[in-house]
Length: 341
Image (cartoon, rainbow, N blue to C red; front, side, top):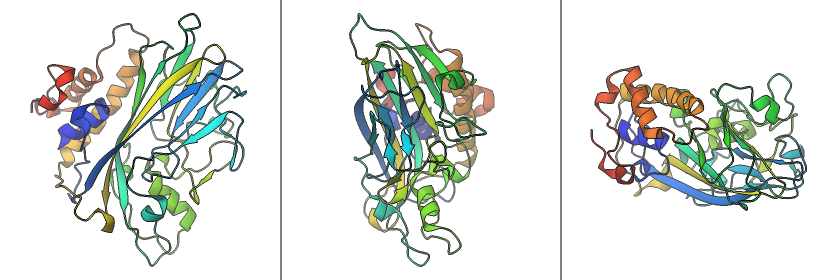
């Protein structure tokens, strides 16, 4: 139902988002799961840190890079060469997902993957956890509107800097405080709303095709920056469509949580699937509204009292058509399961 995908985009950590699916035709029954990870990142020795987000359907793939206290860079450069992490940068995998890279990838052009998936939405939230005395700095939250690599400066591939990121209209800039900053990543093209074919086309490179299967929001890009790639579980990791950069005193810590909502089909999902429904028109309206919601989030960055993401979604739905008549904002955010249709 469109209410579920709207919930997954507007409030990915909420109860109503669980079990979300993409209501596109044909409505293939699917296994609906969500994975949840928590970790702590740190401002490096030069006063900045970063977290990159690589939505991934395999439990041993790459979900994020993040900085620790020994990171000495001044840009979002997770690698110093292909497969070589920069000092102070760590990898994170979505370990809570049910299927591995080997199960989600077709080994050659004649065999079929055991499970293949599509990502409904991804949510990220972060807040400051250091001492009150040292509380300072800014956060720069960015989701590429067309899911281009967020660690690269366009037209050259140099590592992303805060100076460049701050010039983007879509970058949400706010103080780094104990109030959470958040972002939502969701499909921006028809391809990202579909399951990839479960077999590798004979004319395609297995490496490139498997990267596209595992990282559907990476638009086929595997270069992190400056031409460097990272092989994770024997497959090139997809480039990140989203990034958070943050500043402050060296050693200041932030807490980060990432949730992914994913649908799977295939041989391994037998007995685990539930019914899907198709509503192409409603799905299109929700996606259009989600893009408007992203712009509203940027416009409201830094406000002490911000509109809720649900209220921004509802307002956006009213701008794109009559979808607002079908989906109502929860009367209380603590009761998301009681949504009115």
